[in-house]
Image (cartoon, rainbow over all chains, first blue to last red; front, top):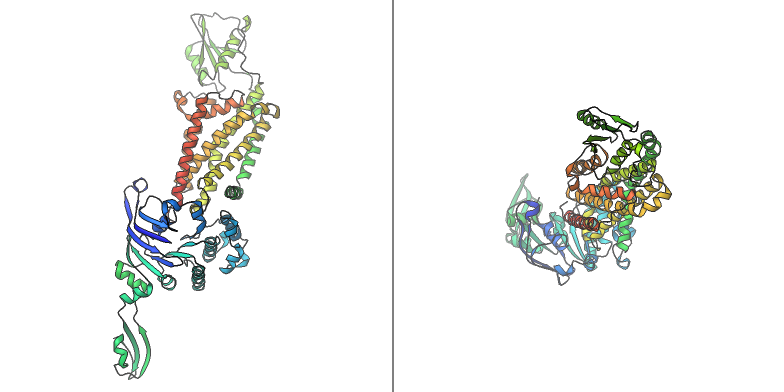
Length: 287
Length: 333
């Protein structure tokens, strides 16, 4: 679906005073029906990459192809009909209602590919009382739901999501992840840009870590954890009335617990989080 | 076609929610009431006369009109003209020949004043002034003031109008969404320009019909609408470009002030007051203003160079506005 080879990009002299290269030769592919996570801190080049892929930014170096065609040929009206984009912020007409916003934005697509606006909002558990109220009266979570509905309403084949669970409560985040997974099951390819490790871990088939315009790691979350895990286990227990903790190598548990104890309190694998792995590769935190 | 309709419908809603149509209607009513009950009543008393001052050191002209004020020296003549706010005319008799002294405006524009002054000087011997039009003084005033108010409305108010609508969209961030919508991006610019142009044309037609009169308006309306269209396109595209390039309404207000100061003010001062500016011929808005004024007086600009120039300017401004729009779409949140 997406093929990127030696992608470079610089913000030109005209607007920024000097050439500032923000992407330094990125290479990655995204398969059909894959959820691909693009992870990195602010300013790492995530949004720039997404803007190049969606045709907002032009003048890149290297080769980028989408839907099997070179990017310079695909950014036509037909291409825009096939993609859906959720921006980092919920951009909506504040004076219009959720329904009016969706009717306006969906009016640019062919009628036969559109979903029913109310049905999409229902799926996103949007409060019915607010359907006809202006967006200016909505909470951030409600705006994010309308924005997601806007991205989904045209039944896109390729979905770009920038921080999809931003501004949502934990229940909303779970709902969004379920909907994204449902889209994938329908055959939609999803490109997620985020610095939320939980989203990446729970959602993505593969993730790429981007730092200072370079991809520093690219694999499935499981493989990254296995390759970078210490395979140690933390055991907490009570012994002679005292609470104690020991860290053991996983292999050493084959013969049972190798120390005296009265009661086991908990056993935890010391598997690294994606954030730990990111720090290991990039030498900095995500947020 | 469907995309154009959607954009036009949305822009109409944005303009309506920004009370743009209400403000335009209010301006029309205010201007019309001012012309009918203020300006014409006030000017009616002063409509007929330009003060004419004569300095005739040899005393050659004895049978002159009682409307001429005689002065005793060149200094007194200059002082009288400088202090005259109604466009006074001076006659200086040198070597027996009358020389016209116009303190205000350009000589080309004010030939009728010179003609009027000479007709008073030679009233006893049947001087025949050139007939430059068949307007009554009241009709002349109606055309002049309607033209001036229309010019102000389009240059200043229309320029602000597009900014008020666009800044809202810019602040809401929705312009960025249009980057990934399946329609040609220049339609976004065209839709706004078309609506503002249409509003300005309706405004101009109403102003002309109600303030010049339906009978006279019939003859001049096509030319007035063409000049209004040119001015409207230039100002709306300039407003569009400024809104896209400037950060917020504060910066825009500064740009607006600059435009008001450097665009409208010199043109008005030069065309309507005693201030004379030699460089006014180099001011592009002077030609636009005179184009509109000539249209109101039934002598539309016939020079093709004028139309070629304005077409080039409009195309250039459209290019700048579209480029600025593309830049705004690619901005970070």
